[in-house]
Image 1 (cartoon, rainbow, N blue to C red):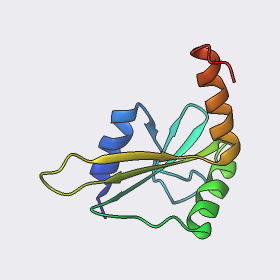
Image 2 (cartoon, one colour):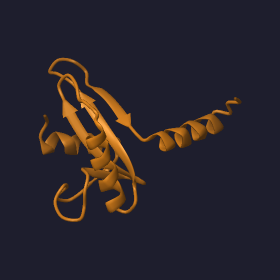
Image 3 (spheres, helix red, strand yellow):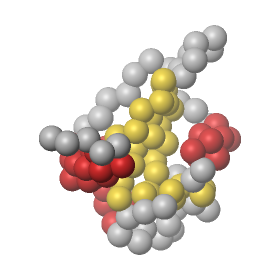
Image 4 (cartoon, rainbow, N blue to C red):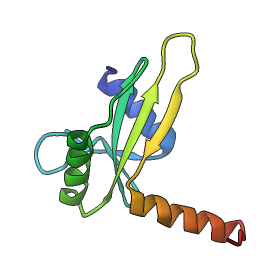
Length: 108
């Protein structure tokens, strides 16, 4: 697992604002990015997404301004470029897909 310094670098890289004292008090999550509450998870080889993990991110997002939950997953080992993946819920994915298709004038 990575330290808070590397989480801050990941948040900065994506243009998100870090949440002060994340995880303590009323402000939850690692950062905010527009309407998203971002939770950064960094591991060397793998990370398991469970109902409990997604429920916590989702609950924190609602508590922090009724935001959309976003899991920013970074997998990387020394000497290997990191793999970055964002996880969003199904309804947000469909909204993003529709916006992308409209932007790129794709007909279905």
